[in-house]
Image (cartoon, rainbow, N blue to C red; front, top):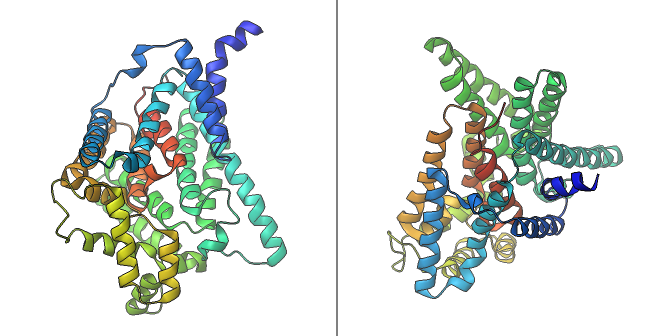
Length: 395
C-alpha cells in the first residue's frame, strides 16, 4: 500500500490541485507547491521540451515583453501580468509527467461539475426564498455563483466539451456523459452568460461548416437553422434578452448597451490611447503603469454620469481584451505574436474537432477578458491550452 501511494503521490497532488482550483484561491497554490517539490525531487529535463510551434511563439512573446519592460525600467510593475504566463507554463511542465490524460480530463470535469452543482443549489435556495432569478443583474448574480459569471460560464463550456467528447468515445458511460452535457448547457442558458452562449453556437457553426460531412447546400441550411435557433434562444428568454440589450428598436438597444456594458467605454478609451503621441505602433506604450493611468484619465474625462464615473474609477477596469492589452503594451509585434499563437494552435490541432472547440472557447474568452490578469485564468490556460490541447491521447 505504501509503495502504491509513493508511486502515485505525484498524480494525487496534481488531481488535488485541479479539484480545489474551482473552490479556493489558496488551496491550488498549496497543491502547486507540493507538486513542484515532488517534481524537483525527481527532476526530469524532458519536461522542459517544447514540442509545438504554438508554445514556442508564446515563449517568444513572453521573452519580448519581459525584455522590453526591462529596457524601459518597468519590469517590477509589468511582471505582475507576465508572471501569470510563466505560471501557466510551469503548470504545463508539472503536468507533463501525468501520462493518463483520460483521468486528468475526468478530474477536471468532476471539479467543474461540483462547482456547477453547488452554484445550482445556491440558486435554488435563492429562488425558493424570493421567487426570482436575477440573471440580468451582474452584481446580484455573482453572489449566487462560486465564481464570477464570465468565468463560471467559461469553465461550463469547457466541461460541456469534455463531457460531450467522452460521450462519443466511452460507450459504457455514454448516457451519463450526454446527460451531463445537457445539464451544463442548461446551466449556461440559466445564468444568461452572453459570451458562453455565443461560444457554444460558434463551435456548433464550425462543426457544421468544417467537420460535418454532407453536401454544401445542406451545410448552408444547417448554418441558417443554427442562426435562427440562436435568435430564438435570445428572444425567448427575458434574462438573456436583457443581457444582449435587446429593446424595441436599434437606437434603444445601442443606448442600453452604452449605459450598461463597461467594455464599450473601456475599448473606446483603449482606441483613444493609441492616438496619443507616446504610443509607438511597433512597440506600444512603455509599460502597464502608463496604460493604467491612461485608462483612469479617460474614464474621468469621458464618462458624464457621476455614479458611473466613480464606479469605473473605483474598479480601475483593465482593457477586458487580451489582444488589445498586448497591443497597448507591446505594439503590433505583441499583437501579431499572440494572434500567431492561435493560428499555430488551429493548424496543429485542426484534425481534432474537440481540441479546436476548446481553442475557439479560449479565443473568444480572450476577446472579452484578460485571462492572464487572474491566477484562476492562468491555471486554466496552463491545464487546457498547454496540456490537454498539446498531448496525444492513447484512446
